[in-house]
Length: 446
Image (cartoon, rainbow, N blue to C red; front, side):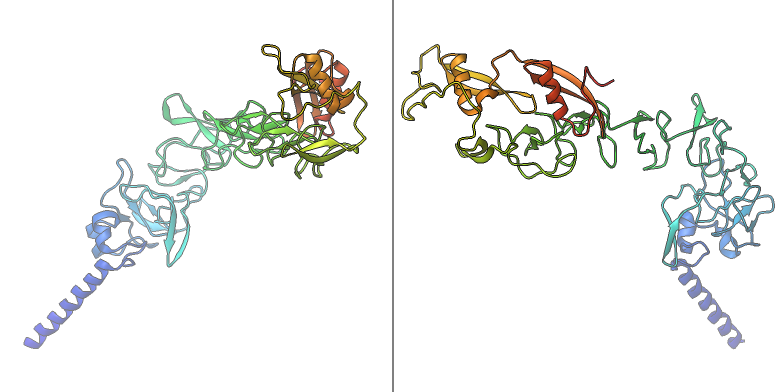
């Protein structure tokens, strides 16, 4: 008798030990999670502890807590609950079949909806939909593969996996019926002037000809002057567009005193991109020597443009100067003033109220009129004469006007504003600012 009682006690101890191990073991139940976790958070109901469930041919397991109005039954990975017979079956997920609802899917788990990866035995993969195509009908828990597949078709109704109407094919999004999120029509998404798609990183798709970005839920063109910057690749594409360093849009760039194009490029030889990301003139008489920077059309800049120029030091700066004896002819050279006396650029005494700074226009070989060459003088005529000692006949004595041209080139249409003493010079100047462009046309780009 005592021996029989001892056997019973030993068996009871083994049962308690097995229950303890199962309570703490993360793999105690199919689908993962300890018995303790399954009872208090995400496991089957208490009755499931005493009956096998979840495998094909077994009864469906049941979450102790569930999202309201959703059937709380589920099965193991790769199977689905046939709620008509309360049996786990496989295969699942195709049209007309039982919906897959295991932990490897996006099916609601208890009172929450899982996201991210499904991991087992150290291997992880993305969770899959309850149905490979179509929607999981709430009432029958079977896959309906007829809805949400083409533009113009009715959206799939809210199902066991998503609480609002939806479309089930890439490139489609549900256009809801007003404020009713339970119904709508599938429309194309992601292309230019279409609604943005829902997938992260796939809201708007771009082609080489049409790049777009999401704005207020719509895919709009990006990369052009005054438009938004593109999210990837070249932020600003053609037409002399450059990223605004202080905002989200593209600005006119690549020209004199304009932002540099991407890659620290400027529109033509004779400019360089300075430390402030601004295109500055270089390489001409009296201008800074061009640094060794790449050109938009290939190659690199020359220090000084012209066989009669060389890069030399002027007041501590590297400046392009005429080689000895090769300066253009002038109408006479004023004697430089002694360095220790206050004199004008022409050697005249300073006159209070008369001596001032005059800005002289200089004509480049490209026809561009460059202003801002300043001289301290008693008159503009004296300042112009001083300028001729450096720039020769390149000094412009006629009135200078601003001209606007548009040009089609490798990066599209480009609008430029240039200065010239006449239309012929201005057209030549505009042409020099765009490599491989068509003839300049007066006016702005369309």
